[in-house]
Amino acid sequence: MRLLLCSLSLTVLTGCAGLPKGIEPVQDFELNRYLGRWYEVARLDHSFERGLTRVMTEYSMRDDGGVKVVNRGYQAESGSWKEAVGRAYFVRSPREGYLKVSFFRPFYGTYVIMELDQGYEYALVCGANRKYLWILAREPDLDEVVKQRLIARAKELGFAVDKLIYPQVGDPRTSAAAQVDL
Picture (tube, helix red, strand yellow):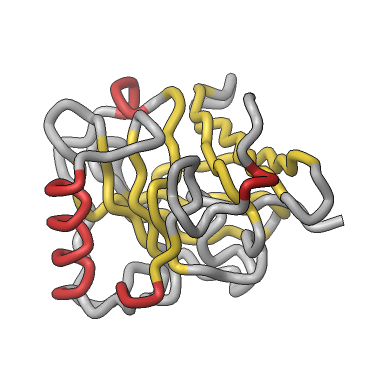
């Protein structure tokens, strides 16, 4: 059974928790404002999320001060939802959008928030290298102008934006079988 490892899983398979060269995490980060549900608007495809649509992540506080991460996506091939539960911790400072995440302890991957709007409504996130990229938003759809600006920014930073996929409902590349209610 393939587990969903989405926005926070990033580089779990490599066990890395480093920053990609030339990428800086956002500063003055406020975790309490980041908590809650985020939808995956776009991503670079990778094996542990392949075939999943309607991907979303729920962030909440853990008793140990870390962040509980629940990733969920629909797999049309099997007609079922896949879910993975992980934990995340700040790498350097809770005021910096740079965390390490684990779905398979003791292995941790990198979660870098490269851009975050002032209202905490959308974010540009990457892993430890340029193979992992996500555009996240509080709603399944993101204003097209904002989305294109984030894609342009990711391209400037060296990500293969021509390979982005758009897993939410309404995307013409999303399977009709995945168009189910939550």
